Length: 601
Image: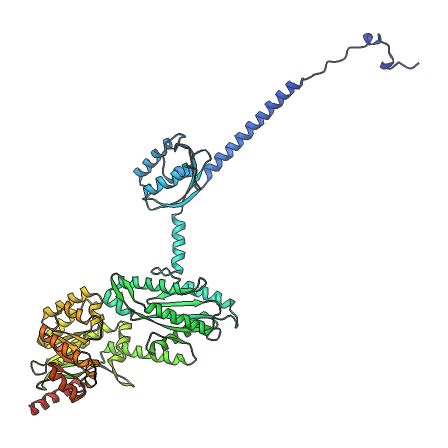
């Protein structure tokens, strides 16, 4: 018979069965409490890990980090912040007032240079709940710190501090490597980079243009007004040129008074020509620099790719050749490159080289033009006129090479030679016949001018009163104070001072007010007008009367007819020179003029 199963037993059967093992039972509340304790423990572990990681992150941050509350008391800071300002441990504790930290920085030399801006502007803005502030702060120890203040909702702020001294220095070096330090314009390096990129993109239908801009008469400004004025003038020129072009064009300075304008997208020849005229006009407008009204000009050479060159160097070289042509044609103009211009440039380079050789070897000559008394016809002096007997080319007048001598810096050496040679020649003439030497404005920039004149007089034995130094009005329009000081020093040597080409400038009468000249030379244009109806006779008469009143001799230049001489004599002009009275000749012809005068006298 099968053994009965439990559920087959009756009600009394359970009492007879073995007792069951007890089971662990939990209430819902106790389970939740256990679960909460586990969650809390897990959260604490997670928070501890998070804090550990946060502390590690703070400690290893390369930049300084600090947090201040709404009363500018320190909440926390990291090790980089402590190192940045060499803070002692006591100043890094929570609750430290910001002012205590700043006092320490003042004492240790790491305080901001501009204290007011540092303390009031960014911090107060942050405390008022303003926007994030990012700026560079210069410290007294020479470092530059980039500080970012980030306001915290409810007050206070977080700030990061990064020493960017070396980064800024490197950036400045990179900028200087590609920009002109005087004007801030791109330099030759950056110009070539942009030109190369533009050439790589250019097509025959999308041409680019290069304009070489050279300032006219800039060296005279440097020589007469000094380099600080010249530098400010270059900055002003850079600003004017930049204002004439579009945003994607480039104005670069190559050095000295040389600029380049790059037009990367294809403008037609007519548009380029219009721009060139506008550039010349804007540079030719009067500049006001340090109280001086300065007038210069500009010459421009233009080359257009790809026809005039498809690489940077030949394109720039051809634009420079066109510039040579512009200068040769009288300056103040623009020329486009044409084949064959290299021959003209080579001729100019050879001319410059020959001139340098002549200056070095002193292969110049002085020719002398007589100056006579209008009443007696007697020779009272000679004007020394510089000539250059260029090998293979013959005699070259000073007007054809003096400008180049000034551009190349040779003029100072030439001036010294002329003064010495003229004094030596005049020492052999009958007394009291004088010799006149024209001084360029450049001579008044030389610190050796007075010494050179004194040395020439001493070496030759010429009496100082027999040397006459002629200057143009441009000398006094430059650095007038310096020029006047030199004129007074020269006068102190006993030499005579003459004002040349009187009446052609804008301040002739002002020159007479500034300095007491021994002689005033009336410009040839007024003498030529004596033969025609007009105001010239009245002007000459006024100048001679002015001379009589102020005590200076009047000399007429460019006398070519007997009628002109007669009028000058009638109007009281003291002396005259010109073709009628004698052409300029070499020194060995002067004795014959004296002999002829004795025979006629």
